[in-house]
Image (cartoon, rainbow, N blue to C red; front, side):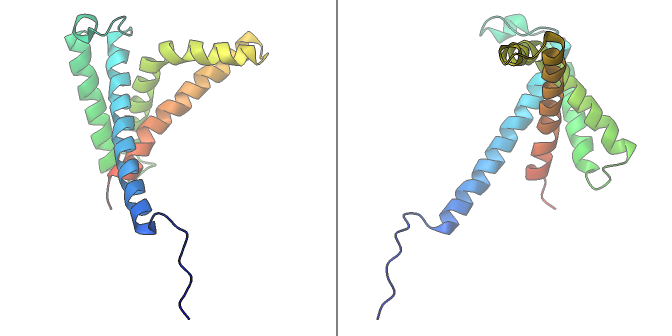
Length: 150
């Protein structure tokens, strides 16, 4: 007797390969978002048009890229010493610059949604800011977990 044919349409190895590439590319995307947050933190405002070269200061672009590049490199280099100042200092700078860059864009949106859910204004504002801090932490942490091979 032969074994019954499987109803599966895709092999497990194929799924694992797709997942591996998806995680890699989403990690690179998240890292890019972190760089954008640092640039916008130095720029002070989000561009109002698609002509980014008119709305983003070259100094902000360079400063954001240098800061985020430094933080990323130091976090990755010290990933095995997560309680050391060499890791925590750059991590806090990374989170802070991403938060400052994205807070003007995301906090009002989150706050409005929370207020529609009948939260008091001050509670909605605090929770919205906290949510952006958590997102900024995730933007710093997620790429490190997936892009650095041990």
